[in-house]
Each structure stands twice: as structure tokens, then as C-alpha cells.
Amino acid sequence: MRRDALENRGRIVAAASRCFGRDGALCDMAAVAKEAGVGTATLFRHFPAKQDLFEAVLLGCIEKSAEAVVKAQLADDPFEGLTELLAHFVQSQVQNKYLHQIAGHRLIGRPEVDKRKAGVFEGSAALLRRCQESGQVETDVQITDLFALTEGIAVATDAQGWERPLALVLRGIATRR
Image 1 (cartoon, rainbow, N blue to C red):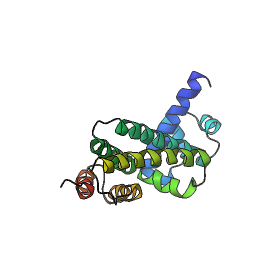
Image 2: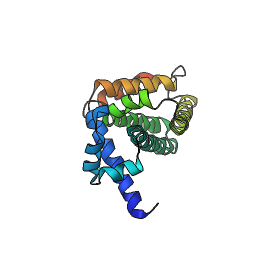
Image 3: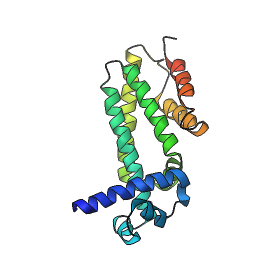
Image 4: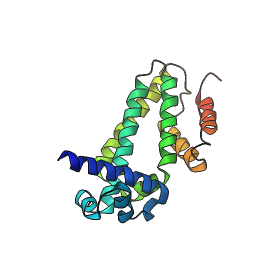
């Protein structure tokens, strides 16, 4: 792909992310094109259907989460890594609240999405196990518990109100209180 085409694609995905974050599924393709500074023909050349654009934005979010998992796994203290990772998940869900709602309904079963989500899940679970093996997290905590809790925090709070609930969750799962 030519450099200008790649730049256009990147601007479209970034604009769509902002638009979906604001308006959810009501975000219209013409608004995305305008916000990206491209024509609708350019947008449709890259993303023939709105579903394709949803998937591209979601894959970008999942990629950022995969990077956060790797960074968290590299932390010397696994609990600090887990703390950073859960904070990333809450922030991502707060920032992309509508996208996650859309994705949950419309992108189930897409092979690329499922594959990347599985990688984030497995990496997160491995980090949790490391915390448990080091005696820092209660052994009955499951990664699905933490995903449900971070999602709940994101739904119940906004960009400024999530830190205290997450701190309470972390204190609740820690063996050293």
C-alpha cells in the first residue's frame, strides 16, 4: 500500500475511534470521513462497510491491550504489572465504551478479532498466575473475574472516576492487605 494510502487509513481509523467513542453505532460514515479529512470515496475504498471499520478500530484497541500485556509481564513485580494492566483495561473501556458495546454484538466470531482477544486473555491469565504463584493474589481469583470487574468499573464511572474503584478491587484480591 502506498504511503499516502496508509496515512489516510490511519487517519480514518483514528477518526472512527473518536466518533464511535462519542456516538456509538450512530456514528455515520460521512462524519468519519469528514473528521479524518478524506472523502467518502476514500473511506469506502479502505472500508467498504461500517462493519469493516468497527473491526479495524477494535483490532487497534486489542493491539494496544496486547502491548499492555507484554509490558505488564515484563514488570519485575508481577502485582505492579497486573495493576498497570487492569488500569489499561479500565481506561480503554472508558475511552471506547460504545465501541466495546458495538463490538460485543457485531464482531463475535470474526477470526482475526477472536484470535487477538484470545492472546490478550491468555497473556493476562499468565500474569495473574504469576501473581498467585508469588503469593500476592488470592488463589481463587480468576482472570474472568478481573475482566468482569474492570468492565463494571468502566460502565459505572467516567474518565476521572475509575481509579478508586480499581484500587478497591486490587486491595480485595491482594493477599497482603
